[in-house]
Length: 381
Ligand code: 2NL
Image 1 (cartoon, rainbow, N blue to C red):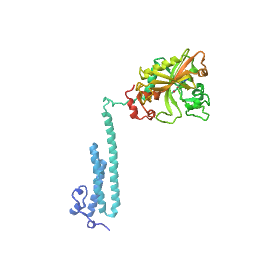
Image 2: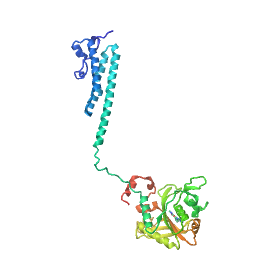
Image 3: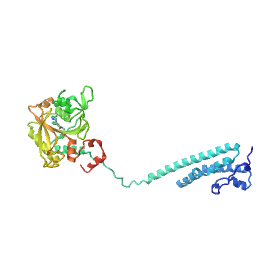
Image 4: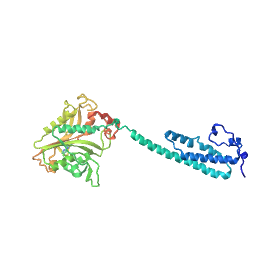
C-alpha cells in the first residue's frame, strides 16, 4: 500500500516548533505531492549532514552554538526524526540510517572540535602563566616536642664536653643484657622486658641506649664522655604514663678518678640548665644491675617551688631519671681495667623531661601525631 498524504494523521503544530521542520503542513498548504514532501525530507537531512561535516566553529562560543543546534535538547535533528512517522514503510529504513549517520556525525564532529579547542586552550593557558608572580606561601612543619627537648639535652651536655654516640635499635643479648651485668635469669631482666626477634631470644629491640655505651667502651679506652640519645622499646601496656616505645638520653663518663661528686655536679648542672637556675637535685638510693652505687635523681619542683602541686604530687620533688657509678663488672666486660678507671652513668627518658617541661599529661600524645597537638610547638626552637 502506498501512503498518501491524506492517509497520514497530521497534527497541527505550533509555529515555534516548526522552525526547522519541513513542514508537511506547509507542503500540504502548498499543495505539494507526497513524493515531493519525501524528497524534501531527504534533501533537508542531507543538507544538515553536509552542514555538520563542513561546520568550522571559530571559537568556543561558536562550538557551543554547534552543540546546541545539533545536539542540544531542542536540536534540529529532532524534527527530522519526527518526520520518520510520516514516511512510507519502504523508505523508513533508508531514512533511519541517514538519521543515525547524521546523529553520529554531529557527535563525532563535536568531540573532535572540543578536543581541538581544549588543546589550544591549554597551550594558551601555559603561555598565560606569569612566571614572575610571587610563589604561594609555604607551610613548614613543626619540630616534634621530643626532638626539641632531645636537641636541648644534647646542647646542654655538649657544653661540658659530652659528644653524641649512636647505635643500632636491633641488638643482641650481649649488648642489651649480658655485658650490662644482667645475665640470663637475672630478675632485673623483667624490668627491661622487650620485643624479641627470634625463638632463642638472641636478637631483640634494645630496651635502653646503654647498648651504644657498651659498643663505644668495647672500641675505645677512656677517657670516654658520651651521651646516647635514641629510641628504645619495652614490653609495656600502653597508657598515659607508659608506652612500648620511648626515647632516652643515657650518659657515660669514664676516666681516672671520676667520682660520685662529679656525677652529682653534672646532674645539678643539667637540671639547672633545663629547668631553671633555682632548681635543686636530690639522689635517692636505688638499684640497677649496671651501676653500684645506684640512685634515682629528683629535681625540686620547678612548677610550685616545692609548695606542693599535682606535678610533684605534693612532694616538692619530681623524678627525672636514674644514675650511678658504673659497676666494675661492666668495665671488665668491655676490657676496661676497673682498677685504673672509674666512671658514672645516667639515663633519662626524653618524653618524661618533655612532659615536665611542657606540662603534657599523656605520653600517648607523642606517638599519635595529631597536628592539633604538634602545632602547639610551632614557636618552640
Ligand atoms: C633510667 C635509668 C640508667 C644507666 C642508665 C649505664 C650504662 C652503662 C653502664 C652503667 Cl654502659 N649504666 N646506664 C645507669 C643508671 C641508670 O637509666 O631510669 N633510665 C630511664
